[in-house]
Image 1 (cartoon, rainbow, N blue to C red):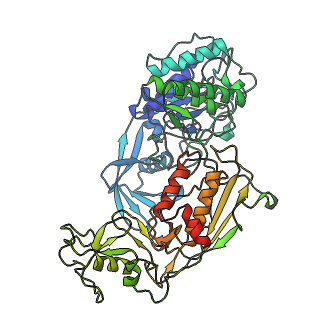
Image 2: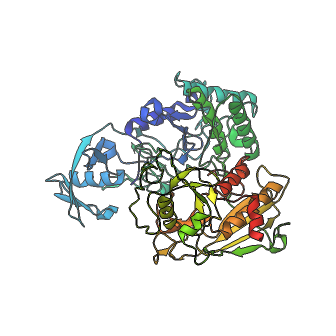
Length: 603
C-alpha cells in the first residue's frame, strides 16, 4: 500500500516551496504535525531524513485532477479489527470515489490489485476469497493544495532569479529552523570550514515532461497541454508500494524516486555541500562527531548512510546538531560493521602452532573403568562421618542426623550413612551422593554440589566431531603484535546416545563449522592447550535447548565461552576484550581443567 502525506503537510511543503530561499530549502514536518517531529525534507536532494535514526528516503510530487477524490478532499477508509479506521491507498480511493459518483451499486477492486468488492448500498468491503466483510466510510478532509501554470523544469532550487534574489529569513523561530538557517549561513560565509552543514536546497518538483507525469485517473481527467500545464492537487506518492513500519515511517509519508538532477544553469550564489567531494564531507562528519563525543555525548550509530551521494554524511552531521539543540544527548555516527571472519588466507599462509602437536583431533569418548560400581567410585573421595552434625544435607534437604530423604532404590547403601568429601569437607548422605552420581555422566568423577569442587576427571556428553587449529597471518583487535590462532569446530547432526537427554532421538547441529579466535600470545596458547583438553573430555559442547533460538535437541555451547567475531565486538563475542583470556581460564578451571590437566592427559 502506498503511503501519502496528509493534505495539511502537503500545504506546508508547498508553502515552503513557494517561499523560495527565504524558507531555507528545508521543510520541518513537525511544525504542522507533532507526530512527524523527527522528519526533515531537504528540497534540493528531494529526500526525507529522520533525525533520530538517520533513515534517508526519497520523496516526490504527483499531480491529480481537481475533480478526483484528493481534489475534493474525499477520503475512503476501512474499519480495522480494533475499530479504528484506515484510509485506502490514494489510487484505490480515487477508483472508489469515481464509481460512487457514477452511482454504481458496487465496485470490484481487482483492477487495482485488490481482491475486494465495495458495496455502496451497505457501505461494506467484501473479501472475494474469504467472504469476510468490513465496514467502509467516506469522509471529507482538507483539500490538497492546487497548482496552476507551467510545470517547472528540472533545475536547481531556487527556481528563478527573482526568487533567488529574495532576502533570506528563517521561516519561524523554532530551534530546528534557527539551527538549520544558522548552519546554512555558515556554509555561505565560510565554505567548508566549521561543522557539517546541510546541502543547499533545490526546487521541490516532479520529473519534467508529460511522459513522466502519471495521468490523473478517471474519465474527467484533464490532459496536459503543449506547454505541460496542469491543474490539480499536489500529492507526493511513492515509486513503489511500501508498508508502514514500526521503525518510524510516519503515517501518510510518501517515498519514491528522487527528483530529476539539477541542470547546469541552476547554480546559486553560495557554496553548497553538494559541490564537495565525499572525502571532505566524511572528514567534516568525523570532526563533528569528535566534538560531540569529547563533550560527553554518547554515540548512537546511524543506519542507511552508505551511499554514493554526498548528501548522506552531510545530513548525518546536521542531525547531530539538531538533536543536541533539542536536548537529546546523542551523537550520530556511521554504524560499525560486523566482521566475523578474517581476510582470505591461502593454504601456504596457514601454519601449525609452535608447542602444540598436530593441527586437528577428533572427539574421543572415555568411559569409566569396567567393574567400578558407584559405591566403589565414591569410596575414593569420601570419609565416613560417625557423628554427623545437626545440619541439612543440601541434596535431599533432610537433617544429616536423620535418614536420607531420597526415594530412589539404593540397596547396597544404608540411607543413614553420612560421608565427608575429602578435599572440600562438605558433608552429605552417602545415599544421596550415590543417587546423584547415577543421575550424571557416570564417568568416574564427582562434583561437589555446594562448592563445585571436582573429584576425578570430569567428562561431558559432547557428540562426535572434529577440532582444527592453526595460525593465520592476521592480528586481532587489541592484539596488534601477534598473529591469530583460528579454531574450527565441526560437529555433524546425528542420533543421541545413552548419555544424552533423549537417547535414540536425532539431534541437529546448527552453525557448523564454527570459527573461533585466540591471540597467538603466551596466554593465548595456554588457553588453546586447555581447550584441547576440554575437547578430549567432551566438555566444549553438549546437546540441549538453544538459549537463542529455543530449539531443543540441538548442539549448544557448554559454559566455555569462545570468541566468534574476528574483527569486531558487536555481539560481545569478539575483540578487543582485555579480560577474555582470564575469564575463559576461570571457566575451564570450573570444569576441572587447569595446567595440571595437560600433564594428566599426557600420562
